Image (tube, rainbow over all chains, first blue to last red; front, side):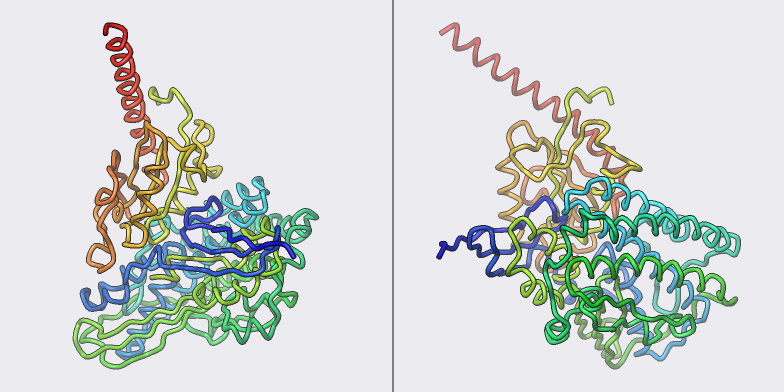
Length: 359
Length: 154
């Protein structure tokens, strides 16, 4: 029997834009165990609710993570609105949906690029990020920010998108979808990609469910669970059906994300077509008193904001459970059996967002 | 771009930021901004790097990592603090865990403002850093020359 060695992976590692540390226990080149340790980005944002007033905390919520920033703000605002019994106008719900889906597009394209880079497919990395820039251009055009947008607020949204701008975005979607489909074809049909991904990091349906994974990690293993199906924001009117793959390997998780690109484009198209007229926000008075579990489907899975108000301007408690945190047990399950050279791919296949995880 | 005499290699590290600046640092490498055409490469190895691009407000667990990376880089080296929280702690400055800026841990040469900093600003920061890198190199070369001359006379 070969001897065991421990190889540290991270915190500073070329494939990870963010620090996470994993101790890999190896037998020759084969991973037999993985021990993650986190905490490099922990900032203690949950405690900040006691120092910032509840409308101000939206800005902090946006900076829990720079990638799914809009959706964190959305989740927080929906929670506060539910506690305070605020009905937001229809137009703001549609606008929130559009910006959410643009966040998802930019996050998935970002991930596809990083994933291609981890495979050593630099061409594909550049192409994905090139497409992503056109999504960011629309973000900047409509909100003023590329990454951090600050358009969501308690009681609605801060900015409107004019009809001519909406038409322009709608016209641009066709060519954008064509580009995405070309990109998706490479990810799904290319022999080298298949060779690297198929059968790697397998997570069975039962494991995915019992370990409580979320998002594409869960759907890639055949569990049809997507919080958008419950119809928050405008998803109720627009309708949504979860994208599911059954193989449970890295290829399946990649396929889920590629197909979600198309479904996001479809949602944006239908949201623009069905955009109602009217105001974009309502006036908010008073302070939240009560508690609520607010849930939103982020690019990486379902995020939960638990908010507890005590009738003052400052919340008593916020607790945030992010999708990557839920996916780390699944990651520990996937790694054993992989070659050391495949570890970056397996780690990236859950789309780890460390600043979300550690808050 | 007059300073651009050599190709600087960059080491990027996320010291407790929200990740927004980090993806903008990566965006600098991709087709729209493409800093690789200037010979700027993002390396994963501190021993190969000339410039440390660092984001975030540095929490207590990250302090030794940041210092370690800085010490592993060969002289001359330049540190760029990217984003508002790398400069002062930004929105996170009141958090119990945050040191409040990179300069609390290692010396910083260039500050790039913004939350999140835009790729154009980051590239601008790197260009400013190139000038400082060149100055440091000259100073080191000057110091070595003086030592040599002093060695000859004695």
